[in-house]
Image 1: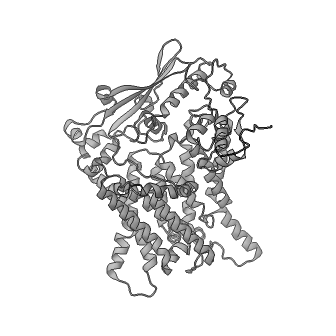
Image 2: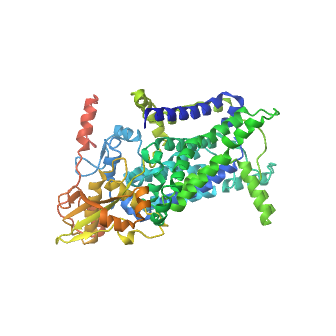
Length: 638
């Protein structure tokens, strides 16, 4: 990003954050952040968000064993070392008598609790343990969807989904980041006060006790969690729009290249792209990026609407037009629906578009949902149902909590908004090390709240090459087997592409088709193929596993227009490149053989296993001696 662009984005982001925190200083602004509101908007969000969270996790079902068990790519002993090494510095893997399984001492437990990675599957990752974890997650999320013990089911659901995300980030993408951040915010919303079993039970008890509670009328809830989600949604769009500063986006070709990524399109787009690549798709690119940058205006409009509106004041026609249109929801929510809906129709990116569309509900007020339900009920001839679902809480402009509670929430909001703004600051040379020092200051808080974030999707440019991973296994007899694990194989690319296969994204990450440095995954993926082959062939190890990178360049829009459209696999055959990027020799590779517990589970024998010996106990004792601990050499039980 150029210096001018970075400064402009930083100024725009700072302005939005400043407007958000400034509102806390005015009376109307305090009502915006600290008032109470109709609970139905958060109830609708709870139902939709929790349903999509379950769909997102269930979208991995084909790869549960691969991702989360000791029969997968990262057994727990490996996952602890590669994903949470510092936390498990005082934890033994049980590979010898001198290094038993478990924490060495109380300080080792404290080291683990410092975080930030927490997963039950770091400790128990047999297939049975994993399926119990998944089953409990599904039941808890069902309780959250129907609003049964809503607060506790939400907390437990957040813990369990974080446990999955922390166990293995190989599959993680922007979708998981959105779910993690907004799930945390949803914990603080009293989303069970409407359209829930909890609310129904509360009304039933009230009628039994003759407490005079109006039947069907929900209770008002604090508004700040929804407003914080509004700001976070605006930040996502703003940051990702600013980060898309590369030449491909500026030229208007980003949508064209994104649509031609073979891993993601629903139907082959080449014939259409040849006609529309230099005109309509360029307009779509600029439409997407401009909308992302400008979407934050809708949040500014909501703040100003609440903060500057004065009861009984004479309306200003010009200001009213700006507020309702330029800063209003009509334009920007329509843009969001058009953009995310268009991506969903043409590309299969899992639940990203659906959850982003769902989050648009935070900009809809509960009374508006109620009015819509009453209208639908009248149209469907069911006025009693519409009255029940559309009943509003008592009106009023009251503030939530008492003075101390409001002060605490205001301080917390100001700190969190500032922390996220600092974390999302773009890299600007003139800031020097100030940005890094500020990030180090807020990092513990954001890690604690699970709201560390980065929104560089298809930024600064989208990929312009299609990249595939070929896995070649050489068996004990010297015969080479193509495992056909990627979409270069015809059976791996059904069209239309309806059900998302997350292995496509993982293959791109492993073989080098994604930014972020996924090369280190290669050796572990190859070793998993060594182990898996042995499990499927009565313990017989293959000689080697080779990972081959296949790639071809997507022709430019002009070339597609002038030369005509292409068939992807024909272009890979005629113009593609093939390069061997990694080879593992299974008999000598560390963990290239099934681990003892898995071999016993499958009834096979393993000769000459090569476990990963880490010698953490010696390192832990040395660390404690360096810290001056006189008990550092004490062994358990002595």
